[in-house]
Image (cartoon, rainbow, N blue to C red; front, top):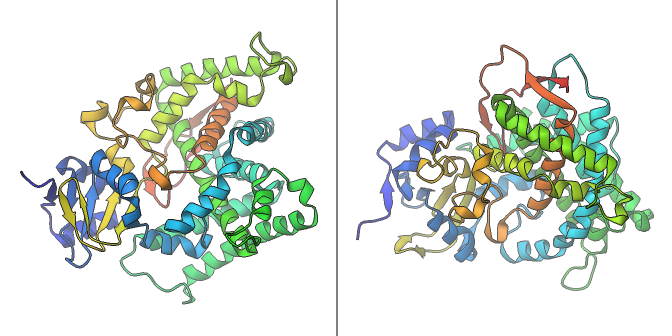
Length: 456
């Protein structure tokens, strides 16, 4: 039986240079080569690109205990410490267990109202007739939402400063993860000095919130911060303030920057797809009426109108727009794993310390699966994502390390799109050219996107 592992035809040097110059193009070109593509690197640390949903399921689900996140976690740890995103194995399982209540359905319903309030607040003061940087606008919006939803913290003038600090940490982290040489964080390079300053800016908000929660715990009951303050370790002692900080930093970075990037891609894609934009606007208009005037299906508790969460459940096409955006532009464009011991998967053997690179960005562009894969067509999700193999479409990862906040992210993106689309359409200012993906820690439009809000 022929091997399911195919050696890449180009040289190691050519592969390295191409990946450094254009990682997304390199991964997309490797996608049709085979199920698992060997980059023919060092025999001590062999590296593979994994394109097959079956092999991905082995790595992320069936044999996940045999793998670690490795290099990506060690770099992310500089910023977020030992939070859910960087913890390994048993520590990760313990943390996920005590964080799960943050995303229970009842809390999600409460978050929906905060998302609505913050989005309507933005809409009321939306700059008109002049360009706005959509990435900055969406970053500040989602930052305010995550701070209120999870930390019970109101951000006013601090939003821009905090969003800028997040941007610095993302850029510095991405540059380090894919650098051939990692300079120790203790070395005071200009980049490290800037990165550490950004971390201190974010920590100032976090430690202020922790201090307020300690002095007034009743006010923070039901929030993520309140839950963390009440959490006990395996010995029954409260978790340390450092661990509370690490989890808050994790949610702050992973919980809003990814959604903000996806929203910018959605606005851009809708602008390029007038038919999809028109359908989205029609649904958004209906949602706005239901939230304002109510309907026969509104619950008594909502006072004769649909709550934000109930309105979100009506957004069938909007959800398809988000799903299609996440197909073409998944924020987590690459997933890295390293084997901790020799493993056998689907008849193929891999040595200890093998590295596996899984790219949802490339796999979501498989023509054999999606057809017209480069075309933005939300209707392809009419029958849901279950029509394809489990790991043919996986914008939130999968297995034990799948995104814990995926439901929150869909809710947030859906309500923001719906509320803003009911009032505005966004148009790119001329001269910017095509939107080019920039693969940082998550996928954003290179150089951002300057757009004008046109009142509908």
